[in-house]
Each structure stands twice: as structure tokens, then as C-alpha cells.
Image (tube, rainbow, N blue to C red; front, side):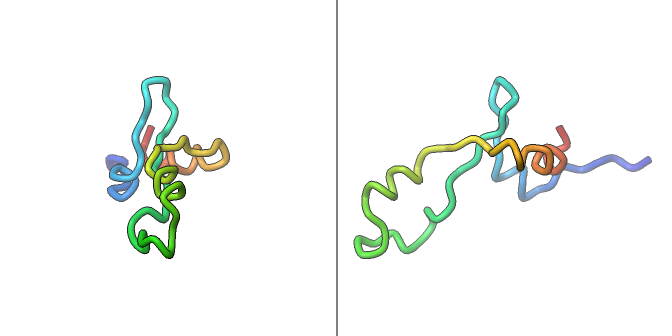
Length: 66
């Protein structure tokens, strides 16, 4: 039986908390951040981390081999 490898992309994007939940970053924070596109409030709120929704947890756990 071969080893089960962790998905490299998921390894970089998700982080496990102490209680076993999975943290993620918000999307849409990489470009088009100029004054006309996104407000300061939008950009500030996208900075914070969020938890992965319970509907996506099984799929992400499989990718991370938890």
C-alpha cells in the first residue's frame, strides 16, 4: 500500500487550529485593490482569517490527510 500524500496546494492555503478547526484566508485580496475597485473597509475585512464551512470540511480534511 503506497503512502497517502498531502495535497501541496491545500497545505499552503489552510491551517489547523488548536481545537481541530481549519482556518482559511479570504479570496479577492490579491489585486484590483485601487481606490476605485475596493473600498478601504472591504480590504480591511478581507485581511482577517475565516473558518472553513462545515459543508467543505470533509473534502479539505481528505486533501490534508487528517
